[in-house]
Length: 521
Image (tube, rainbow, N blue to C red; front, side):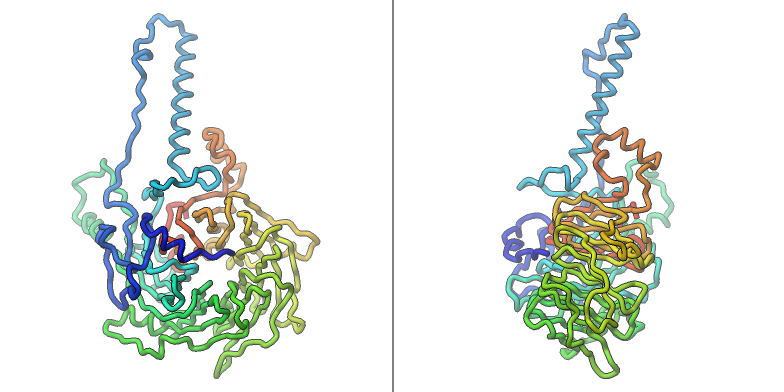
C-alpha cells in the first residue's frame, strides 16, 4: 500500500477542497467551536467546508424541432412520418445518453479531471454531506463509539472521530480527536414547493440550515501514523476510549482518549498533560513500520494485533496491571502484512492480508504461531480485508490491481477455493474495504482512483427492473448491477461505517474528511 507524499499535497495547495497548513504553528483550535461562513477564502484549517451553496438549481434542457421539422410537408405519407418520428426519438435518446455520460463520473470510463476542472457533488443523491478541512492529509480515520443511542436517523447528527496526520515535518504530526455536531441533512429546495408551509415546517428548515460545529483536541506525535483504530468498547460509559496508532517508525502507541472525549461535552474541563501521552508503547516490531492493526471485537479487556512489513504479527493483551506483548511473533512469510482483522465470531481467530497475495487464517492458541489456512486471493498485493460482523463466515478482500472479492470461509478447506463474488470495477489499487455493520449485503470500497463505491450483494443480475434499465441505457452494460453509488474524494485512503447511524460513512483523503450518507443506503 503506497503512502501519499506530503510534499505533493503542499504543491497542490491551490487546488479546490485541499487542506493545507497555513503556518508552521497552525493547528486545529483546541476545545473551541468552528462554524462555516460559506466563504471558502475565509476558512481556517480544522473547519467544515460547504461543498455546495445554500440553493440548488437545475438546468432543464429543452429540445426543439428545427424549422425544417416544423415545416414538415403536411402531405407526407404515413410511412415517411413514422420514419421521421423514429429518427427524432433516436436522436433524443442519443442526446440523453451523451448528457448522462458527461455528467456522471465513473472511474473506469470518465476522463481524468483537467487542470481547471473540479468535481461537484450532486446534493440530490446525498442525505448528508459535510467536508472537514484538516491541517495535514491523513492516511487513516476511525469512529469513536458514543452513548447517544443506536439506530439514530434524526438530524442534526453528531459524530465523534479520531484521525492522525501525515505532516511535511515529522515533529508537526498529531493525533486529532474531534466531535462534529449540528450535522444537518442535505437540503435541496424545489421551486415548486408551496410557499405557504406551516410555521413548524419553517422552524424545522431553520434548524436544518444551522452551521455544523467542530470541536477538536490534539495530541502531539513525532511520526506519521499509518493506521489508527479505536476499540469497539470505547465510550463514556466504559470510562476509557482505547485508541491505537501504528507509526511509520515501527512503534505502536496505545492512548486513552477518555479525557479528550469528556472535554467535548464538559465546558471548562482542562486536560492534564499526562493524559496527552500514550498509556503504553509496543516496541516489538523494532524500527519496521507496518499497516496491520485491529482491536478484538470480542475481548473487552483489550486484545490488539499488529503486523509489520517484515511479515511479523504480534499479539498484545492487557492483564490486571499492565500490557503484555507476545515475544514470539506469528509468521508465515517475509511479505508485508497489509491488514489484520479479528474474527467476529471466535475470540482466538484472526485473518491477515499480505503482499504475497495470500489471505491467511490464524488461531492465537497455536503454539507454532503458524497460519491454519492460507489461500491465494490475488496475483497482486492484498491491501485490505474486512470480516463481516453479521455473517462471520464472510470475508472481503481488496487488491492492488483494483479488484475485490468476497469469500466464504467455509470453502477455505477446499483446494484452490474461488470467491463467491469478484468485481473488477476500480482501475487503481483498493485502499479500504468494509462491510456495513448493520447490513451484511452492503460493502464500501475505496480506491486510488479517487472514489468510494457502495455495493449491494443482494441485488440479482437478472432482476427485471435492472434488466430493463440496462436495455435502455447502453452505458450500464459494463457496470455491475450490484453497484449502488460512486462517491468522489481526492486521494481517498480509508473509509469507515458508523455503527450507530445507519448508512453514515466517514472517509479520509487529500482534501480532509468527508462525513456522508447517501439516499441509496
